[in-house]
Length: 415
Image (cartoon, rainbow, N blue to C red; front, side, top):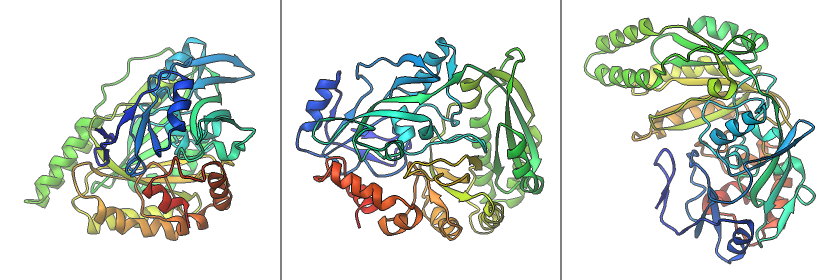
């Protein structure tokens, strides 16, 4: 049985693990529809309903190929955590990464997964060429699939096997972490994005405090990374939530102790090691990407409603910014966007919280993260993306029988 990372989606259909491209092509050419799975770090139901599942983790392809003009071909189904050290061996690195690197490159790019940085685009925007296995087992490239459609596909145009990506010389980052009053964070967030290579913050519910994270390229010697206490902090937040059901005062006390225990961080390390961290506590997530000029007002309303109406929530709210790009299905198409991510415990009901706040994001012109939970349909999405119908037309042309389609995807990509 297949299950995703959050364990909110499962499938019991057969899982095929082809070892080479010819075996993969023959498998895809079989009549039943299918979906490819990577690390399962998507919270959406786009695998369920498929008659077959493909796991490409054993596909024999070079992890990293030769470098030319700042670009390199890579195995698109390798995990980011494996690609980063492989690139480092050649003195190279990703320009930017998100804070989780368990995903395959194909999965991360196909859902427009991103990090943070006002001038840094999402991972998909770094793809300059790509190779796919089409619905009939045929080989496709960006000569058949325009690059702006190939970068973010949700696996609907074909199975991404190899990608040529932009890379940069290997570099170190200095990471600085501080606890700041929320009012100051909101007042200064645009300045912080302008002044820092990477900037993001996490609001700690019911404390009036936020944890700010900054990264800057550094030539300083690497230092020892501080102990990762994120998991402990989330456990304390849950404990405080549970205690608050019996005594609001006890919740406040535990939250005050947590913020007092929060210590500043300042260390230097290899870029991917600094940007990425492990996530041991499972959660469900909804994330919307908003126009930068109105995100502050939306955030203020989100925090107000969280503390007024959702006292059962204890996970922090994450806020990042990503540069614009040109991919048809990229949430960042047309300009930079500020991303607001809501989380709940994987084992608890998310619906009341997510359903209450999603309309705020939609009213502000927000676009959902493709790998995270939302309630939208074709009608909604076609109004949010200028090239949405053009993408749907190409999908229909390349896969008229719906080889890569599932019921959940049909709701998104068919009128």
